[in-house]
Amino acid sequence: MTPTIAQPALPADWRDLVALTKPRVMSLVVFTGLCGLLAAPEMLPPVLGFTAILCIALGAGAAGALNQWYEADLDAKMRRTANRPLPAQRMDRQTALHFGVGLSAFSVVLMDLATNHLAALLLAISILFYVLVYTVWLKRRTAQNIVIGGAAGAFPPLIGWVAATGQIDLLPALLFAIIFLWTPPHFWALSLFVRSDYAAANVPMLPVVAGIQNTRLQILLYSLTVAGAAVAPWALGLTGTLYGVAAVVLSAVFLVLAVAVFANKADTPAGMKPERRLFAYSILYLFALFTAVVVDRWVAA
Amino acid sequence: MNPHPEDELLRRQRERARLMAWLLGAFVILLFLITVAKIGLNK
Image 1 (cartoon, each protein chain N blue to C red):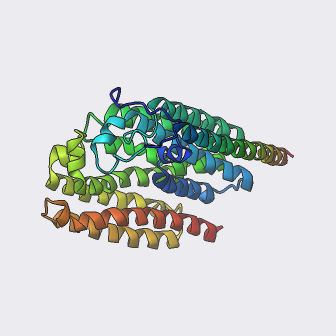
Image 2 (cartoon, chains in turn red, purple):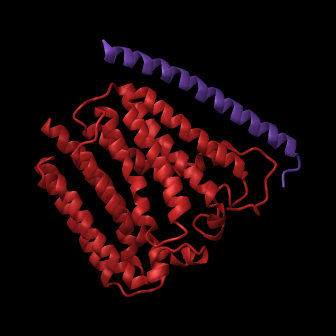
């Protein structure tokens, strides 16, 4: 919490309100939510599908705003986040809180109105999970913050599917599992080359608490579980060969890059090219894998 | 520092008011379309 940060007199610029929603993170959320919706066996009318994705985006934005409201003190200590609206003192904290709470309520109510109760409930749970479980409870207390907190980012494909069908099935549960298991190697790769930032802010990210080599081992182990989860929809007969081949090839590359990270012995950011490569590829991996799910389901239909 | 802070205040208030008007208009249209789609689903 940041009671010491000075309160600017001017009202917040709308661009800073947009920045509060973490638009870059939102793009992945919107995409995976859209894939969950498009992979579902039932088709929503376009306007309801659009509204469902809009609500997922607004819910993610609201969670991001509340995260920044709570973490303004941490963000001020890290170079990567110091220019966000709150640490840069371009906005007062109360505006961020009101914006986050209002947007959360709006997104959940609109989701309920446009789709169904279960999708709205899942959206509410995902927002609360990100804000209360990850941001407030875990992030400053345990190196497992990203492992458990990763569940918050795994909800969108499940919500998209449920918005279309009204029920939870095995395939969206596996899509949830893929993102849940993908989050630790993705974030730990990043946290290795920005380790000094997390150390300066006293955030117990794994490289800070358990050391660099141990983090590299964990990245490799989690990459194996991601590969297993990615292949599971095909192995269980929920998708066709097209997805199966894509999952095997994409996961094999993921594993090769994870092995390169494990083999790297550098302990300065300059020597962490394998980590940067894995971080960048992990984003492409998720986009490609979820695209493959949708294409496969459409081809099968 | 801005030598005329009241100008900046007015500019921001005007920008936000205009944006809110657009968003409210879009929301009304969206609600109408949702209603039409829901009625279509229940036919």
